[in-house]
Image (cartoon, rainbow, N blue to C red; front, side, top):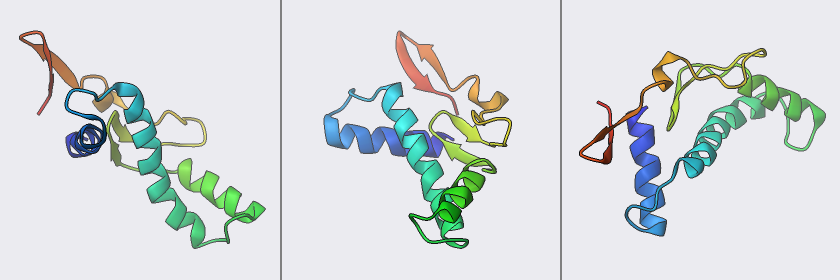
Length: 103
């Protein structure tokens, strides 16, 4: 997940300046990462704009496996739409008063 987190940070700070990154944008980044994986799967089953596509997209989103995003690794199910496991619990530490990503 570190690679995804750093990709988000770099993209955000390139657009808005060094030090501007915030966790809230990371949630949007994560949703985008999920859609980038789910949409191609849904397109294999149906055309956009149809009920069948929406069903296929939902199924793809509810069956996400091992997708690294900025807040953790996504493993979603029908019963667990959060999808984050124990690896999402500790992502940063504070060193000398500053946030530091864990290795």
